Length: 303
Image 1 (cartoon, rainbow, N blue to C red):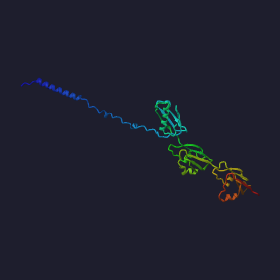
Image 2: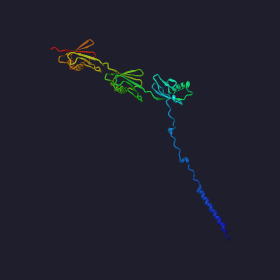
Image 3: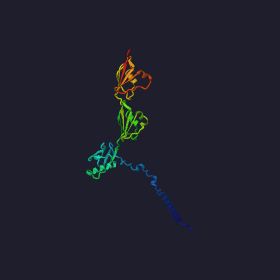
Image 4: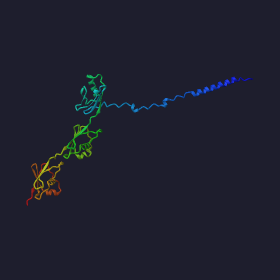
């Protein structure tokens, strides 16, 4: 039986070519597309950036000494920063003074917009904001080292003792027992310096309160000594009002050998009182207190 060799070889060649083509097709298949989103994840959103900006406080009531800013859209010449006067007015370009004190920011904005719309601008777009809030004060006046206004802390916490300390403390001629607190509401109370350093000193102050430190009633007051003492004349009265006969004679330099310590007179507005100075100073009994304008006369000894 004869075999057809050429046909057998042709079939083998065809099979080889088919196998080669199939292999080439497998090698030439494109790689599966990568998941672009997975390979390149989207950047995380900035949560804070997505949050809306906090709104301005449009309910704040404007008051004198507030500094406010007017911004007018596409009108840079009309955009200004002004301070509200004590009258409650603030002055703006073209429209002049406007009463804004006592108005909320929203109400003030509307009032200014209406004035511009009335005579100058068509449908004005503007905004009013507070640049600087007015500082609240309390006052310390009278016999302190640095009288004047004291700004209230941002926290609003300021007490009586701290306010006096900020004012430098009491002046040398102050009456430490007569510190008067006048509330903005009109009520009054009186304290001593010792009290201001204790529980009373922690009394919380409010805007507009006044602290009045009175001058001592004994400033420029004197007593007068005549007779045999080392130095006759006027003796200044202590600021605290406490002056005894023994201390006054000591300030006059003491009695001289010619003095009669048993005969000292005190003339108080025409009423004369005789005193045995030696007995009074040695007994340790209640001291003899003097008053302003007393006249002390020391008698002479007769040998």
